[in-house]
Image (tube, rainbow, N blue to C red; front, side, top):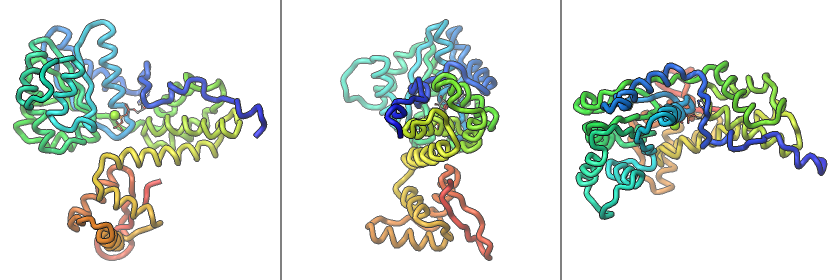
Length: 348
Ligand SMILES: Nc1ncnc2c1ncn2[C@@H]1O[C@H](COP(=O)(O)OP(=O)(O)OP(=O)(O)O)[C@@H](O)[C@H]1O
Ligand SMILES: [Mg+2]
């Protein structure tokens, strides 16, 4: 590396590539933006908003659409709202506590859930209020039922729930579903073309002109498989590798390095929400190139014994492996032998 090259920068605005950046232009999500705006529009006439359930795979734009629609509305109106990530606040009590802080509802620190709920109901009053419950599917089903049943009964309150799939809505108790009755809004994975446009626009904001060719953007989009977070992270990390080499141009090797690191980050993020047994099963599959289901089960039992962990039942083992597959962490193909044997591999 030459002494001058160290100072070469490809990224001119690192913030525009960060997770916290809220894009001012949302591409390829017109119908979802329209549907969510329609749900919230009664609030502008002081009527109860329609609840919404946004669902789709990681990086499909659910959180950014929810934030975008609220910020658009608030440019012309004052619509009271609060955003809660249920991963951090997974109970009705903790949600109410957090909302109370956000809207500065003062009172004694320790109160029962019922008292907190009543205070919140009174604070909302008849004037519309929007509560975003992101990652609602990270809450245990029983608690999820309690949260949605209690909150959807508050007049004036509109809920925007965000989840990874439709299933987490379908398994709600009937009495909850009928009281809550949200508009279901689907977010499909982006196509390669859509991701290329998203990355291209982000590149224009964040990078030196001509640092990244259209071909490179297409490669990033293809690798990201519909996930905008993965695509933008790959672009960001690839730039860091290129800058470290003193290069002014992103090339294939930088993209490969960036993508591989982005995949690792995605796995850590996804595993963070799963149990210790999911994590252990992932770790065991990661330690081998190919693993037959029977061998994985035996290895799992041995490791649990060695670590003093109480193993899950064999039936639960299949459920857990299916979850790892659904989350895109592992692949599980049928083995070319008789019986229900599968070969597990880490998804690259
Ligand atoms: N249509 C889009 N236009 C521009 N940027 C987008 C678009 N969709 C997503 N992004 C960007 O991709 C990243 C991930 O999007 P977002 O957080 O909304 O995904 P998500 O569906 O909520 O994923 P998860 O389920 O993992 O929380 C964000 O940085 C966001 O800025
Ligand atoms: Mg999200």
